[in-house]
Image (cartoon, rainbow, N blue to C red; front, side):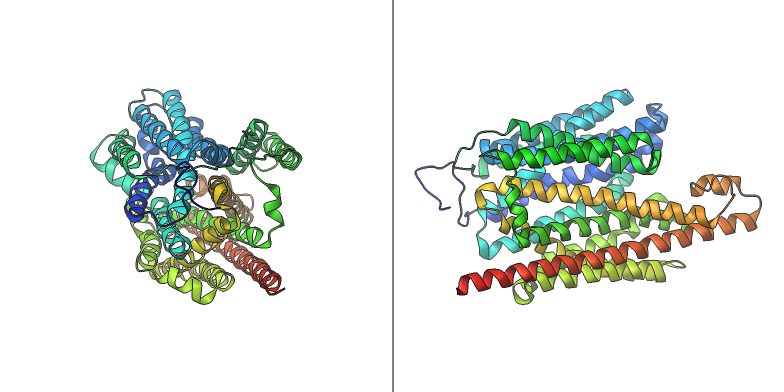
Length: 502
């Protein structure tokens, strides 16, 4: 597709003169969205006290945001392609700001849950349009570097949420963690309106309303099953029914998309080995990052004895390593030299090695964990931009919104899967090491039920062993996924080279 001055709404394909300023603006907006994925976790005691929130209320306060966001990502990306990425970016910022204001001023648990759901709608619009805009304003020579900076913000937001939330709660009331979003979104609205060019799919495809409904219901059901599995049990009726509904509806979605002339998601993309390889890798790197951070916070607090804020500070080397490598341009420079398959294999191998180092060397002191975090950060800095670029490169530029929706959906799915699977391994191993012990389903309950120091030491040792096992399982899964993704990408590139030669 080529750019044209006669149709300013078609997607621009060259370098925009203010592209780096635009990237800074939209990445700042993205940072607020990502912070809200994790910032609420440190406010749980305050919510219990101030809003008289039950455990179920707190669960929905946290999950309403990610559940709505993950369910709408594909639909939001398709809407951005059809109606205009700038329009949807402005709408996402406005909805996110209004939702943040409502959340900060909420007086009841129900009000906060509703506000968080509204923020999830805005977050879905932002997450898809931001990456789509990057694809439009940067050409092929600079796109890898731009995506690397975008992924740096993603990692920073994911890791910095608990730290920023802890700082805010030390000085202000719980609503402040939402109200700080308002000046950022207001500045973002002005900057996007003035700077970001409009772009959309010039083909003007008809909206796929059935596909939008099916994808939203299916993804929401699957993500809900993953989120609720650790609490309700993987064999509970609630989880099994939700998972079954998700699988059935997503199957119907795939069949529907194959049967219509203007599908929301072209299922033929999955015939492209380059796309499939990047998809597999994206899920596994999100699996490793989401699951490992879930385990790390418990490792730091329950095994090494740090408080919540100190634990948050000690996860910082992971994010700082990613920021340092991508801001200095090391990752983007290595990608064209090594090639996408090798870069992903090396990156995922480092993520796996970092997880293994944390498991084997971080049990007694923070030194081993520090080494593992730095190695993991280096691996994520290499692999995440390479996989995002592979996904976006495999999808036509006019479908950039859908491509961003696929990428965001994979990240949400991988994060949830990492927490669910590695958490299940931890709980199973912990309970297996304490047969017949009351409260062995959780460390606090088991410690409270322990009789004497010797029993408490045995419980703590069992939990540390469970953490080590789950982290090693994560390391093996990430390494296997990285090698699979690299093999698929290598084969796809070889086939493309043969076709070009022929």
